[in-house]
Length: 443
Ligand SMILES: Cc1ncc(COP(=O)(O)O)c(C=O)c1O
Image 1: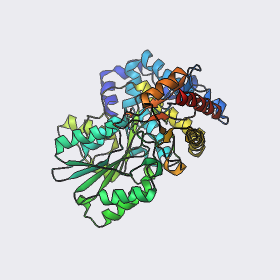
Image 2: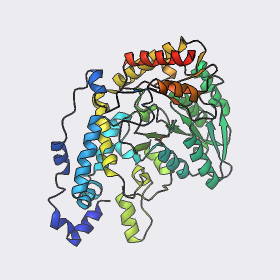
Image 3: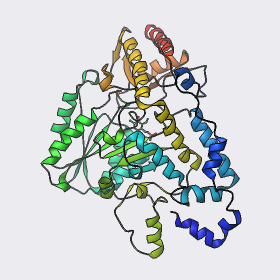
Image 4: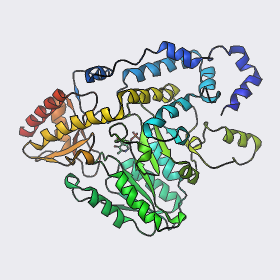
């Protein structure tokens, strides 16, 4: 909302202290050490301040900030504490050139393979899903189709929006057993699940319930075939919870074929805690209604001042929630995407596939253990879900905890134990975690 700047200038505020924020980015750059070397996984591991007393196999839960992100947060914090008014005026309401939200979008766009202006910034996956489902223009008679495999926040976003718009909700299974699911089987389940009233398909890229990575492209192709026979207002749009694929899979999120891609950036992307985004095409943004007032689109402010409705179609900026935020976290997200750019997506995904392949190979050899995540790397990513005969998931997690291994149990009606290998882990640590699990299995 750059015109706030003109408003403040008129009050003399900028005149009095204009020097402080000018060149904020230059000052930040000067106070931020250059990106460390990243060509060796040990150096990458050293970016995290994880407690070495533990083996951290739940990195997907919420990020430990890597060094460049910590430094960016600190640099913004110093600027905000020194001059909150002018730092926010400059970073949020300055020129397009100065916009720190703009810098975050520009850093995220090449990573997700879309346009910067099509990215809405949120605080989490949950917030993104809620903004999308509540913004969809559904009515009684429309159906939201989802699956039994998605996270509680996805189902709750659907339930809460359906309560308001009167749409019906139906859940289908994409497979009987995740461990031997196939692309063809999953696509067939989607095809037969979609009915004449289905308008929305809500799915998850990498399920935290099973570790299965859904073949989103193949699903989107099947939906596109169905849509080709339907009129514009009867078409099925895909809402994707992408959080556990974003940062762990070598794919451009905007090219997966989903209409609305929602993800937190505080898990695999390693961004600041309390950050996330939604990507959609301009046409799909135009179909959505904003829920939360935004600070990110000047036209909204101009329209409000002039007492008229905003001009032009809805867009990503208008869905970016306003209100003042923890800006040091929001703005530092650009540094996480810069880190990901330098690490390179194929290399990161390869390392995650290698570590989790090693976990799955080891799990498969433990007597009494049932692996629920597909072994096929094309149908899995960074989460490995399993059961041990005679033990509940929580007992397994407790047994590992007692051996200094941080695993988790999946928070679903049918719960499994989970181990997840991330950039903070080594193959040797995988072997240690597996050794600990073998002890738990015997005990
Ligand atoms: C599949 C899935 N979706 C959404 C979430 C919630 O993510 P966020 O904390 O970014 O809202 C989780 C939590 O880990 C999850 O596993």
